[in-house]
Amino acid sequence: MPAGRYAPSPSGDLHIGNLRTAVLAWLFARSTGRDYLMRVEDLDRVRPGSEKRQLADLAALGLDWDGPVVRQSERVHLYSDAVSDLQARGMLYECFCSRREIREATSAPHHTPGLYPGTCRQLSEGERTQRRRERPAALRLRSQVEQGTVVDLLHGSFTGPVDDVVLVRGDGVPSYNLAVVVDDSHQGIDQVVRGDDLLDSSPRQSHLAGLLDLTTPTYAHVPLVLNTSGQRLAKRDGAVTLRDLTSAGVDPFAAIAASLGLDGHTPADLLEVWDPRFLPRDPWVFSPPLS
Ligand code: GLU
Image (tube, rainbow, N blue to C red; front, side, top):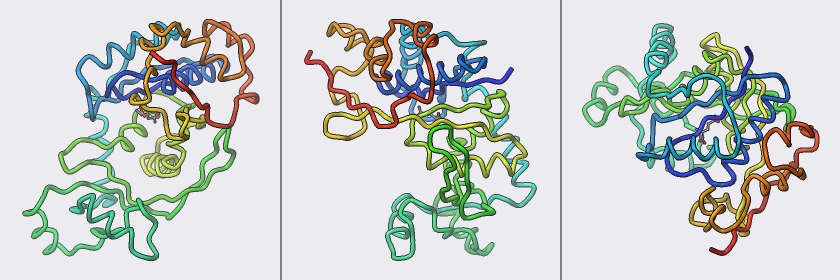
């Protein structure tokens, strides 16, 4: 069964922007006859109790999902297999750069800030031995291209840089980019709906999927929710979680529906009138109620 998904990171309560993305992913999946899967991305930044609260909030909105909740922490063997495969093909290399070194290297002329400049790609065996004494290595993909193109239902054909992405962090934890590619393909997810802050990552993820002989899903990167200063909504902006909003007398689901130009109190109400062509393309500016 083809599927869409929502993949929250249990690092705190979901805010109305996260909830809106979850509703959109549900609408895209259900309106196209897909399953809707729930995957908890708990390899990093886990806050105790957060997963339970997030799932309770999603259920309180009326979202339902198929099959059991999947947790990345229980699937580490799949990521290790992918790493062994790439390693056996000589496609990985050790990287000893700190974040600061990367920042400094990429602030130099001719570099794009944030893109890994390939510093450790050509280290000699002697240099690697030396640097292993200084800090544990991360593993990076020896990427085969400089850029890649993906197709997005909202953004059309999108071309972006593909650099040597980290697949295993220095502390041995599989990276988000590795886990997401392995999981989406292994779970039969062929439709990925998520915030458009991740649009830039999709050419890298698609390139990695190709090297692992995995499929690339169809993407829909949906607009984010911003605060009244035009920044990405965050919890410090005030009453933005489901609990905050409900106690301030706001119906979070109706607010999400209104932000989509729709009227309704349940996901099923919206499904009846849902047409992705009318999804607003601009960010939703949310001004939290005074509590
Ligand atoms: N876990 C990521 C987040 O909560 C989403 C990643 C994805 O949808 O690919 O931002």
